[in-house]
Length: 351
Image (cartoon, rainbow, N blue to C red; front, side, top):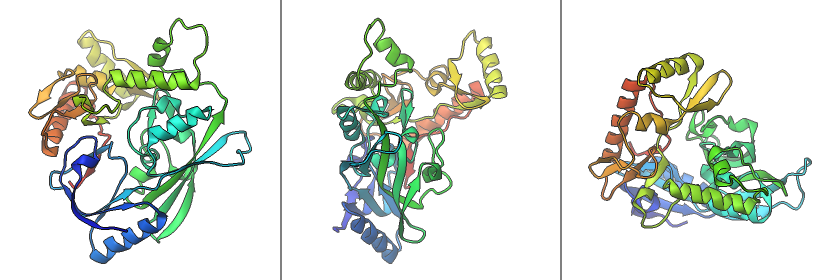
């Protein structure tokens, strides 16, 4: 294990901003993880686990302790399928998520094809219960192998133990900071048809007589994401972001009715769809755009993507403070106009 000092974190994030790590280690094995934890405890410094860096806002002051980048890679398909015919894939937490999706699609296994093009690493997917275009990883995760910082034990958590709900799990709520994710096991459906329930995908394949295969669905998703600036393309300023900065609000019937009344007063109709039992999910992007923040909006070196209203971007030389000032401005305006406070998606590091 090699410990580096004062390592810039900006190049390791899609936002391309933030200060340095006091100490930095890339762990390529479980033994490296265990040794890194001992190092942080011996030095009495805080520990932060870094994955693909795609969902982070790093403070301008950086991180005062040890940043542990998980570099455990590998994709292995188990020789024996699950009892119900599903194919099990054991994937290292440091593996590229999109590389795994590509691997699954090429193996003709369905369940993650609509999550193509999402940046970041496999280890980050259970944390926020990552999802897109009608699929969520919680529907495919069989188990998660973790290092438990509470008692220094390696454990395997089943799907139910992860406490998955919309964009959340125990890893970012009740047990935040307790577990280091080492590997994830996904259960996929061999030779199944792709999931084509989402409106954008239906429009993409409109008029087609034959059902698209998994590979065609993957390419369609990547094409749609690219059109929204949600596919990491080197050199595209819209890609210097953390993806969607705000979660779609899930409202009670009463809250939803109140929002509809506010919209009707402005002669607007709110796009929404059933989310959870007795509640409604509303488009955060629509709320942002109908609160005076158009795509391409600029705020100093920070701004909003010209392709997607939910992506805050580093327009060049932005500080974390500027991004958070823009975030505050949007939250306050949306709450004033619509009576709802938008929750943020990215992890805030060093604040």
